[in-house]
Image (cartoon, rainbow, N blue to C red; front, top):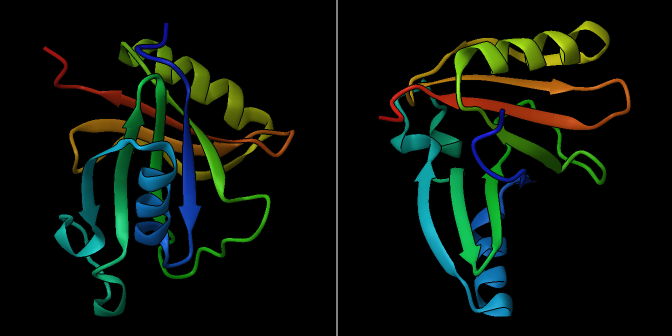
Length: 139
């Protein structure tokens, strides 16, 4: 059903880069990639163009994703973490999205994205936020 392990996604107001460097030093790991909002094919206000839209960190089996918040999305204790599920096919992501969204809060409806995936963000009825991702070009 799922392509990989469930991955913690850490969200920050505007210090994701600092946190990423901190965890790199603490865990002696590797920053795999960093993409800013300004580098994305997405309309971005200039004041957040250098914020991190997406970054990945790895140390052995520890894998973390990082992001700064977009304007208007408040980050506070308790909502700075989401769980990413990578799906193997469209049918499975559709099924899980439907189940979570029936009783949860949809932050981003299931849709095709500019990074070549089908993606949705849903907070379930227990307050857990799930990032659902199916990367279409998995050949």
